[in-house]
Length: 278
Image (cartoon, rainbow, N blue to C red; front, side, top):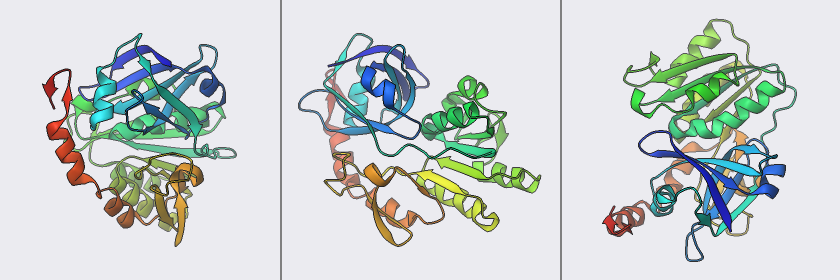
């Protein structure tokens, strides 16, 4: 059993939790993930590791309550226990040797972008962060990012905070201003990662994206998380989740991620949490 030792609400839908998992905390690196289960009857849900504290033996996860399991997780409190908390899974992001990087997060994807920015910054890399959100009310991790980057740019679609526009607009502006990045990391909605990759491709800037296909076991056995990268089939759980952004078939990924949309909608309409219809 894995105890929740700290819980914090980052916005109306996004929660940050610290979970006691000392063995994972000692081994986990930026880019890796865990799979949790609420109880023995629960589904297996992957979440990227947002941070670790090896001394305290804790792993931080940040998640948006969108499906049954994440909504149930969001209802749990400090002192409660999770049945399963397995990891670290996946390959760590390869961050060695870069001098100037731009880390880009979209929405809750900023929770996944944060550990990469932190790791790069601690390695002595000059790090710019572009954090994009729809509006001011869902901005997260601003203070956290300020501690692990040289420049932080916040954009909002509606202009209610930071700079109005998309992360791709800001990235293009920074490149046009002469910033010579040797690495761009983009994590967020699939369309965002696709268009960030289109911005960087003409300049030959290495671009990594973290993919979020349907996943079940997290060990490469089920094949549910297969993605097409450079014309080859890869499995996000063991070959990734990071891949070359210029080689990913984003359209196929978006199509595969909607396979169970109708079932998910039906489940959400009939699910009950704490005796309340969701």
